[in-house]
Image (cartoon, rainbow over all chains, first blue to last red; front, side):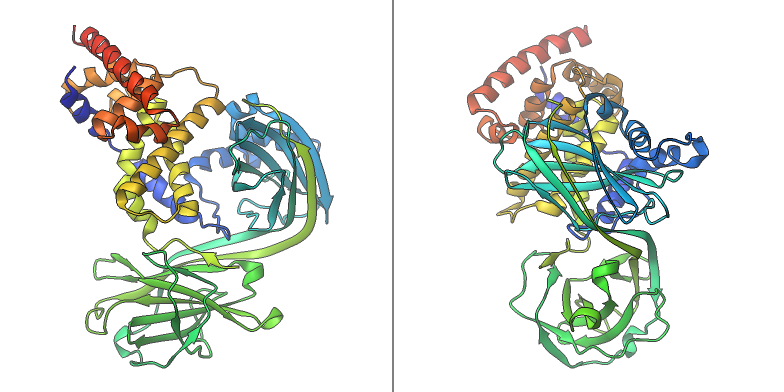
Length: 344
Length: 161
């Protein structure tokens, strides 16, 4: 057998461009922990469309059938091996049901439905935020994603994958899934230009050290200290509601752009700010720092983006960003205990 | 509670650097383009969310391969598929017509041989390096390589003939 030919043949396999774009879109939608999830899910778009009222889903009993219909539409293959659970809890006219589950060794797949029985608080952008928790006999990690939505019954279906840290099987173990709230009515505003003349921004701006609550950088390491701009009043008429531009200036380490968000615990407003070059090519920041001021109702969360460069080197750049907001936080107390069985 | 956000551009970097490699591994393992896309997506999502600090790019690549291999195994079990060779989905992707025969031969083998053959002959890993990636002992990997090579030669001979 010609090993060189095998090598060449396999290396000739490349990810198709449409698949690459879908992948990038999906990866950029997802954020750890405080995930900003958008309604556009390329892999599930067709499924979500099929779930819409246009297919004429029958007027079903509100408590069980919508979830199962969603499950079969979202993953017909999965529905065949899943073990029904059908345990539910209701609060504030929102019904949460653990529909089905299956076990494969140290990983369990659990399907959870959320239905608004009286209103439209559950929609196709519903995000469980980081308000859910899983109590189990073992340490675990979980990943949750929206799998489908039925507009007719106001039901969203989520798929959770829970992996044990100790590698043992979940089979027969009892777990409790709790939810304290969820976000919905989310919107995304992409490539919105922020009208600023970068060359005319203040230079040698005053900064002060702040305590970071989060960060992002190529190295992944948190700096020992971060000097942020002193927040200003906020620019009037910022192009996206829910954000304020509280600082824009040149400091010793480059261009600082500071955004502020109020009530971030309730709206999870988030943004990715970048520079656009002459050909609209994107340059992302070299560092992103999160910090906050105030408490409770007076709390303000700041995001400060730092771009290396000078007014001369970045003279041809414009400032823009992708902004993500959520219109509604619904709080409650939902809890379901069930046993993990099936699958394998 | 500290919040971590992947550095801007990280998604683009990891797709650019590892997308093709992961895609062909998952495609050869699963024999289905749709499944391969799901597996690559799940692998890179997990990378962006939970990846540890890496000592080197090689360490990072090996971690990704291990996660992808596990994901492919999970997908095969969850979807209760019998070995699905998906010849056209894999062989149809090759640029050189002469390579089609070898890809068809590869895809005719059971999945456990395809993966070790790819990791050894295409990605250049030793049996000792492949073992932790697929959760097997080095001796088990060596046996799979030997048998896989033999089966591939037989299948390739039939394809060429």
